[in-house]
Length: 447
Image (cartoon, rainbow, N blue to C red; front, side, top):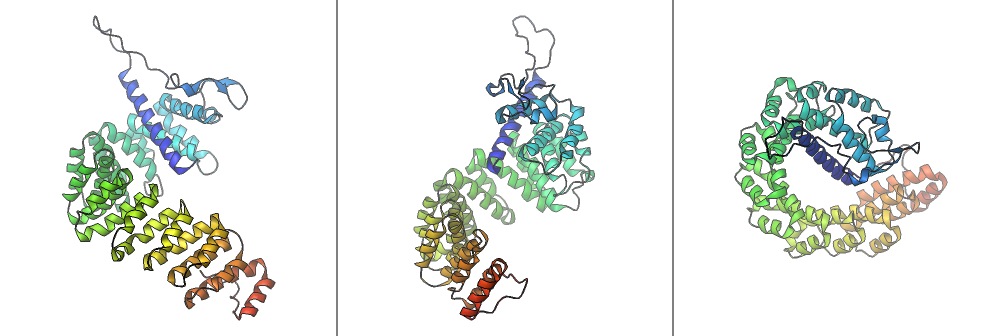
């Protein structure tokens, strides 16, 4: 499962789980209604109304109902059909007794190997449910909290708690027993988590709280608020950011530019052009990078309209992003740009991507380019790809020998020749002797 798909599934799953939990809270049996008032319905199994949860065969071939509350964790994870399995996971988490969440998480962690995407999703859902139902017990289960240990778990619990009780979430954040003291980065992360969730309910209250925090936490919280506002009202996000002190504003402007450009690049760029010179360059770089991720040719066409001296600062960002989607088009555009540090910086990245997908076309195009820093950088990318992606250091050595920059040529020749020595020592020695190149020392592999 790709990361982007996993994120989409996670967000959808969490949304469905929260809706199911809130529905359950509202749907518990109530006293007999007064005359004319309908009786509240009992809670239904979330899988019952899901078209994807019709009976199917499990591993043994026997039919099963996806989302059966009595299914074990192992049985639920063993369901063959992915959509049935996701529905069953939601039902499993929703119906699990709260006092069993901790043991279930332990069972999940005890499974051999690194957790896969579904394991991480299930853990996140369990922690979210625990944070909604019994946050104190959930936090107590974590022990030491750091970026490497239980940080993601703490964020999941804290986000769930904030969604129902922001005051309790703030109390945990400020409690010395939370373990955040002496961990500025963790404090910033948790402040962002609270602010992002709180802003969904009351952005004004979240903003008032965030502006009074210490530096690190303040910037994290403001970033979380911006993330929420940008989904619904980019212009308000701009207004909030512009009211901040310069130290806070610079990072927020970049965040706004990247998100806004993904939604409406024309509006984002028009706003950026109203900024002061000192804030414009970094903000425009973020916007163009985001724009290039979805429409690289459009971002490049906009850049081509800028004066040449101004254009140089953004060439690398667009070319690198474009190369991940269509390296041939990126190379064609980059090759027509005036020589600059940005062009040179990007050329190696572009040629690496192109060589790994179409080495013949990449080599033909590069061979037609004029000498210079960008050509040397391109040869470096091609030679590294030939050496490592295709295990063809012989070709890479010959390309490396065409680099004009003496220092770079020496480093790349040594790197590719060293790889060739490990693959075919006799052929590498013969090439070195014929070309008057000293063989690298054993074990040497400089890049």
